[in-house]
Length: 520
Image (cartoon, rainbow, N blue to C red; front, side):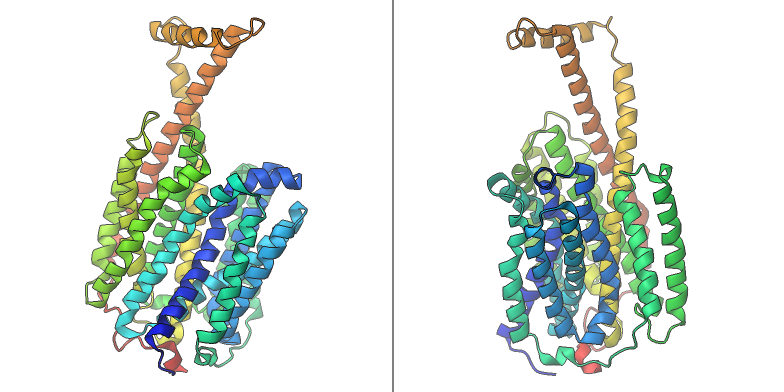
């Protein structure tokens, strides 16, 4: 294996992390552009949501197969092909003139993007072997946290100042530079591998099972869940497809996804913990912007700026944690701290109200940033600690798939929970309002007098007054529901907390983990 210089290692790290950030930004940057895209493409908001759904389905299908694809085509070649596919698809997304054109190209973009995430991490782990692996995990963790957080901010700036195609075009220069750096600096040795046999049945079962599951999670709320025959049938397809997939893969000598590595106790527990981290990471990035924009009146740009300091804190913490792991600190110490701090974040957020200023969110968001730093780095390192070199790419892929699925499950569950709590809180608030109460009369008169000077003489003053009261009720209803959602997510952290203490202590790095290239 070629000995890499310090400068080459830095360039490889920048290349792989930038590619991972680019992919993760695209999972959230589109969210703030949906209204403009719908108007421009002549689609409804419900239909334009397919732009998100198609990307997510392609992403979660390809991620578990990245270990196989990297072995079949060679990791360096597959990585560069993924960057090129992602970049070309980005161009065609921006050029799309109809809904189904952009849905198709977003799917292609998701196939390329899914290959970037896990392969970036595998290349980083090969570039930083042994005791340096904790630092590699820290570097990759920075990208994992930055991507979903920067997406809404960047999207808000672009939508406020330019037009929606630019959210895709900005990928092009980064894609070109990443391709050139990959070709020039990532060693040819990363391509050396024994070609496995193609497991066509496994690929088909994985695509059907995971694709159906992701559709159910992404579109379930829109389709009214199990009131929809389509959702019922796709749930059956997902269960049957995934169960058959597991049975098939365990019988194959060269499976497309080597599920046998889950016999490793630490990897199995780490994937479950990573699932919960994905749940919290994606749901908090989903619920918090909704609360700020729908209830408190923030713009997308202002929301992004509110999230930014906590992301910067995570970036500061992660290299420090990587160094501590490298020095021999047990990962479960940081994972324990991370889970406790995230529970603190949920509890503090649940104490907000309609009168809070942006300064209120600084402390809980900082706590969230520190907590995610304590979780991302150790879990990324724990996922591969103790695995044989040839199994590292597969372990990385499974861990990343669980993070993405955790986010999909989290958003689906939280969305459904919020809808339920909205109904409950609205009923409670309305039941406490009756026209004979002094408080209601005082509030009614206050609003009515405020409207008198603003409305024309012909306006129906009582009707407008009741409309404003209704808006006030709905605002309070949504605020209470979002606060409940933070506590609900905290409950999942509490349930998963005991799993930390079932993991075994293992060194991150050392003789048991060598560069994957040495196994070839």
